Length: 627
Image 1 (cartoon, helix red, strand yellow):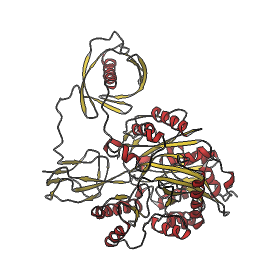
Image 2 (cartoon, rainbow, N blue to C red):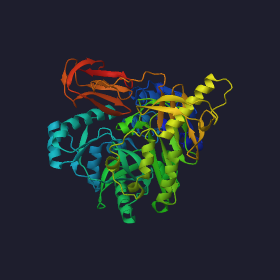
Image 3 (cartoon, helix red, strand yellow):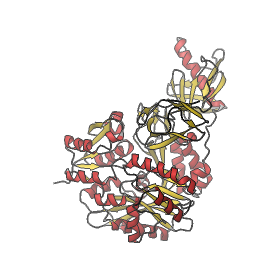
Image 4 (cartoon, rainbow, N blue to C red):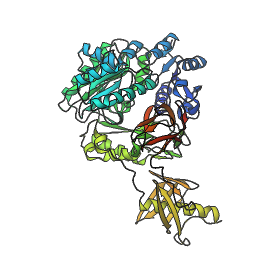
């Protein structure tokens, strides 16, 4: 009898789609689970069967173990793939799946439990002889103990959630004065994200590279690695660009890091796909960071340089087969590079963004793993990552060049993303030369400002508003021509600025989705979406304010605190009538798995407080006013 035939994917978005592609290609039936917010999501449409498992909040849906097990029973699924995030590194989930007779496509619960704890895994790695960063990983978690240990380690240091990843519950602390506030914030974020507020402390390495080794083990005692990935380009401790191989890797260093990763895997009898992460300093010394007991977001770059399907390997191993290759048979060919496309605004400290996807056209010819569809609503309930754009080349420069074109040619309108920042990163001279560390974005992109709308963009916007109005009100007018009538003047808002634009006749034609025009002697074709007085162009939203009153109400000198995005209030630090000072923490908003502190912009007294802990709030909703 086969080991399993129908796989339930306990996840959502791009990874759920990615797993289904391989599973279906190999002949397996697939089952999707979804929350109320994801009813029309691509991973649901792609599956053979789908089951709703609850409301949008993750605790009631994607983290609801019983609802997921019920979905498996209802559909007759006999295997379960957890993807990454959510329950993928929850040992109890692995255990209950096995007790329910489901094949869990991942490592043992024991390996997940040990390596899922940064504290316990570090102790195990020290015993196994794997190089580790100096720090504190004890069981005592009171403030006094952590303060004492921080003084012993020295500053700067890292606070990390023992149970976590993805930058949640992680803080860089530069001085003793900042320690307590960061401990409390890290505990809260860790507790909300992972159900555990246990922390560890580590010495902060200055300008290291983040290099990880992909390992694979089977149930027959075989364990190999598939080379390394460099994941150093990060913001808020979350990866933005990943590549394989590492630009500064040497054969001796790859051998040493690979052997250390295999030591880590053997220490827990590892079975399945896993990643051992290291910090690599300037001198070539490397230190164990953590082990992720699951498939990684960045696994496609390893697939492209090895020619292997890592999800396919996961399914084979879970079915009891031996690894298809030995270590000596693994070959690395060319170079691969990946960027993560996030729904976030880099000009506002990478704040997550929500909204409707009005246009979505992935670049042709590139590998783009995503879970996005046109008309989809990007909600505040889940991670901000929309997908990954990946390219392969014979050399690093060829891969970079192909990836740059694919990022530039990918179209997403309606939701603010980090797309332009990805372009800027890929064009940066230090990145082109491979000279970067985990501090690269903080060093070179610490003050990203909103670009001003160009004259060409404003001219196009005015032309499109003109044509749209002409098509609505002038019967028989087929579009804007060189002999168009008298110019019209528009008041256009772009990036918060008001521009007065005279619409001059242009050589312009449209099909309702793209505008083709000649500007300065150059013919261009530009995608757009126009709905009433709102126009979306790549990287720019323009609002026609021609009929609106010219004056704009200013913010109340920072006295009005509004929600920067959709989310939930998880902490309220003040009450009505409290006196507050500029810079004081007032509220904490949780959105897309991250906590965002909201601070006072002025000295004063809390005049109105309109929220309590647990409230769901909308973007720009007034939360509090200071008089």
